[in-house]
Structures are given as structure tokens and as C-alpha cells.
Amino acid sequence: MRFFFIIATIASVTLVGCTTPQVERDPASPPIGRPRTSASAEQPRISPPVKGPLASLPKERACCRSVERAPSRSAIVRSAAKLVGATTVESNGRRIAYDCAGVTRAVFLKHGIDLYGSSVNDPEANGVRLIHQHIQQQGTFHQGPVVHPGDLVFFDNTWDFNRDGKVNDPLTHVGIVERQEPDGTVVFISRVAGAIQRYRMNLGLPHVHKTADGRILNDYLRRKDAIDPDDTDYLTGELFAQFATRVGN
Image (cartoon, rainbow, N blue to C red; front, side, top):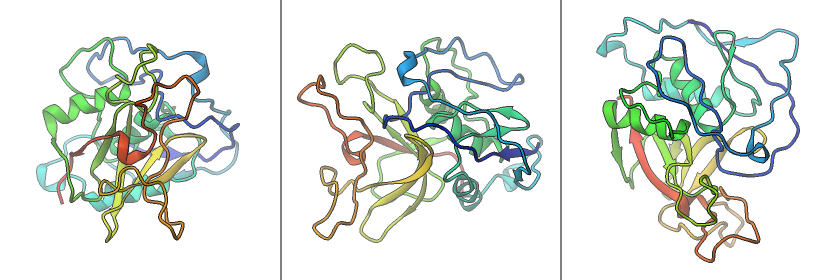
């Protein structure tokens, strides 16, 4: 299977942690039910594909993969890093949903793993929950503090998914860990606003955005709104839910 990653220009999108408004799946994937759709104000905006040469990744077979040939953590991270700055994602000529779950899925699809594949049929599931269900069956969850490149990182309450005005929205964002720095800060790759970027999270100091010398420990992952409840959190460390491992060393 050949996967193409196209870089194009789109209008800026208001910061909000992963809308995952619509789930796309491969025709060969098992049924996953009808996804929940967010309001149009939260829909990611995608410009038409640009003309010109396309950057392509090395060809990978999506089937018949043995345990010994499972993708490495470093391979997953390299594929994710190639997407930094991209504003559209295509897989085998088909546009992949441009949200945090779709981008995460595209990276693993390149290595023959469909993170949307599970035996659970949840009609209310967004893309993040589909990935979480996949890990429940074919991976492991953990809380750190040590995290490895290629791990997934899940977040809660990055936006008001059920639109009830309360902070009660689990599993609303996901990203791929690129590395962990000596001070414990986790650098992960995800689509949050206008493009796929690197973000930081420090679970040792979850309520600190920047240090005195200006070094970012926790990026903002939820947009501030005047109607937010008093107990609303906004930083990555505050919204962290759990890590997950899908591939080995």
C-alpha cells in the first residue's frame, strides 16, 4: 500500500483539542457504526489538494505481517514527524479525516495497523474512542511517568464534546509521542489547530505553562471560553488521561 502526504494551505482554525467530527474507515475494516458529528463550527476546514509532485513514503505491505516484522517505535515516529506542518493527509489516494484521530490513524496505517479496527460496535464513538477501543484489544495502557517514542497519549475534556456545558467529556484528543526530554517533558505530535505540530506536556508540573526562563512545559490544548465552568482545565498536563503502547521496540 502506498501512502501520500500532501502539504497544502488552509484557513486558520480556532484552537480546539481534536474535534473528530466524522470517522472514515477503509472498506476492508469491520463495521464501526455511525460516528457522532459535531456542530459545523468545530469541523476541520480542508482546502482542495494542491497540484504538483507528491511526497511519498516507502512502500509497505499492509497484510501478511509477522510478529518479527511488526513496525518499530522509531519507524512510527519517523512517519509522524514527516507529517509535521501538513494540512491534509491522504492514504492510498483517499483523503483521511484531518483531525487528531485521523492523523494518528494515518501514521499507523502506513505500517499496516488500522487503529480503528476492533470488534466493538459503538454508534456513539468518535475517532479517539475507536482508537482507545482498539488499544483495549490489541495494546496496553499505562500512566507513565516513563514514556517511549511511538506510544499514544490520550486526553480528556479538550472540548465540550457532548455540548452540555460541563467538564465531563472523556477521550476527546490523541497524539503520538515523539520523545521524552530529561526533565520529563513529553513531546508529542498531533493535529490541534491549523496544522499538525509538536506539543509539550510535563506531568510533574501539569499546571505550569512556561518556566521563568520562557521554556514551555505544557501547551494549551483547550480553547478558553467565557462560559467555561470554573473547574475547566486547559493545559496538556491537566487534561492528560493515559498513555498507550501498540508497538514494541
